[in-house]
Length: 260
Ligand code: GLP
Image 1 (tube, helix red, strand yellow):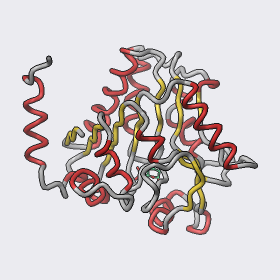
Image 2 (cartoon, rainbow, N blue to C red):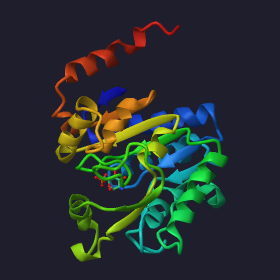
Image 3 (tube, rainbow, N blue to C red):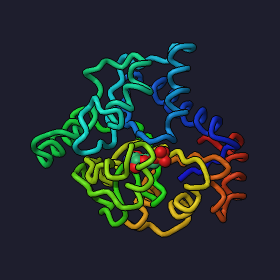
Image 4 (spheres, rainbow, N blue to C red):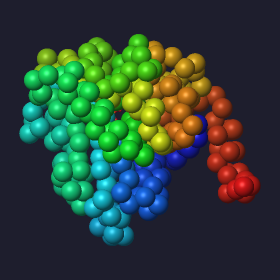
């Protein structure tokens, strides 16, 4: 696992966007896993800027989103469909038929989840999965005690997540109780993982993810099992890290490291 600490949200977002751009430059038809939440907004803005100013091309890209609230139609302003269209898809040239987001309004959730898993496999798997992290250490909507082998499925949100996400809704009662989410196992199958975390509200979860035991109580800790996971934080999200000096030493020494 690589840990990179940036001074602020903006440079964290730019660094994450560069990793995405590198993948697209080597594989123009890459499959990208997309995340929602306020944290990846800066990363999406930077990708849009690279598209508009440096012709970063998404015309052959396919995307799979991590999750969606159950019960919210795609046009609902708090749905992840709406979020992605608003903040990213409408600003770049990904063909609409290449965009995949779990449905929050399907009539048969188990069948839909299996279809979503099969579709990811049909496209050869996810090349790069973008991730945020919940304050309880979840990735996507894999709440504490989610199996680290879990696949796409319906999940009941934790009270903590409902509280955290209530800020986006008029009333706490409006926050959906269920979500459809890629599983931890689905996420670990991606070839590369990039997790972004910002702000002191994430410091504890980030410390547990990087330096704690691998545990289903902090599903992001499963990234320790992945062979190509990068965690990019800002200063505040890094404040709980005990080995911070070492991560900075590794990063500084990286350019001079033997390549072969
Ligand atoms: C939701 C999403 C996660 C996201 C988390 C944190 O729970 N399902 O994918 O990482 O929110 O969101 P934020 O970045 O707004 O703190």
